Image (cartoon, rainbow, N blue to C red; front, side, top):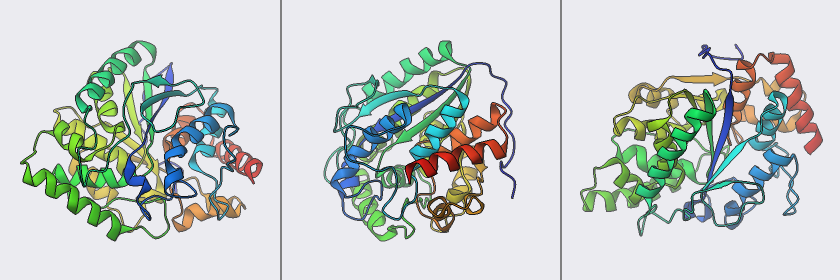
Length: 336
């Protein structure tokens, strides 16, 4: 299989990788998210992943950047790619429980609440406005903007928002066994509130059942004038769908083949319905001789913190498949 599906080939001279950090309390529901050693500690994951990407190490908390089965986290891959490209990351705090340990552009957001019982993003309008301001800023700062996210539990909020926007969505998971029944039950309860209150406005839908990352990313799409790529899987497809509902052309999404091949998600169908071009990176982790990376091929982790987009950015910047794979392998070995 080819390393890259399709070829965007945008013209650019000033690329920038931006990561939006946020929490949703849905990640603390047992069984929803695998992005942490326990449900409560998933609230730490964005801070620790940002620290790893920015510095190459996690020093603020006793944390090894591997899953319990030895699978390197996506932030390890993203760190390797940004290091290869010589690009510093730009982090945005859209709403975190814990204070970041690396420099972040702070939007003074709140942690996403549980959409089953209350509004998930009560300050959605403010976050969208901040996103618009950031889009105008990035228009002056770069001509290729790769937007990633780190929101544990975010595939569940993505499911809720996509369904509320009218899409027959099935979303991916960092688990090998997707907890579909748990997500469906949460989604059903959240959508009942939307139906009861006759909510149809796109940003109100996010207010009821989204997470803080979504309005920020959508606001950036609204005002950014350069080439923009959304780096992620079904979470970023929910952002593309939100942008479309707000009257904007859905941007391209870049993810991994492991998300595309998830039999419990309908990524390609969703992308077609939304009208968002999707490009896939197949890093061939099964051929690298690293048992942890090979677990991506059986459906563990699959994607996260813009790993697919970071690999694609490295490709766009002229690095060969062999160099990209070797850099990832070296980073994974260093974490073992």
